[in-house]
Image (cartoon, rainbow, N blue to C red; front, side, top):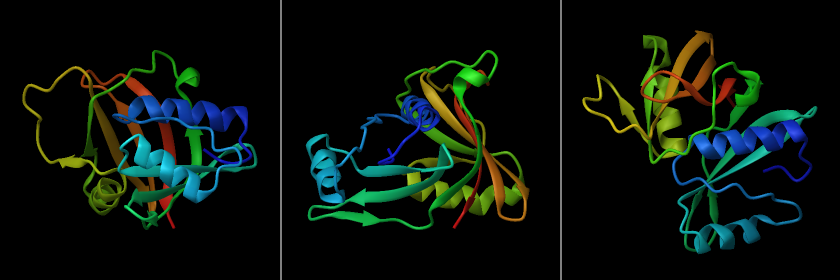
Length: 170
C-alpha cells in the first residue's frame, strides 16, 4: 500500500487482496523497501505489489519479486487510469480465492495478458477450463484502445469479486 493512502486506496487494496490468491494486505506506513522485503520473506510471499496514490485514488501498481537478498523490481508498471471498487458495483462481493487465471476477452489483449501473467505470477487460459473449482478468480482482460485495457476480477459464474481497473503499462 502507499505511504500516504486515502480511504479509496485502502478499499482498493482490500478488494485486490481478496481477488488475488494468498494475498496479504499490509499498510506500508513508514516501512522501507527493506522492511517490506523482510515481511515478504517471513510470510513466504513471491511478489510484492506497492499501490501508489494519485489525487486520492489508486494511481500506480509497482511489482517486485522477492529474492533472497532484496526485492527485485519487475517491469512494466501498471498505471491505473480509473477504478470501480467492489462496494460501488451492484451484485459484487469480496470473496477469498485459492487460484487465479487470466482470460483474454479479445485478440488485442494477448500481449497485455502475457505481461499481467508475469507480473501477477499466474497462468493464461486459452480455452474453457473444464471443471473448475468455485474458489477460482478469473482476471478478464479486454483491450480498449491503443495501450489501454480493462481488468475485471470475476468468479466462474461471472460475478464481480474484485475491483474493475482501466489501466495501461508504463
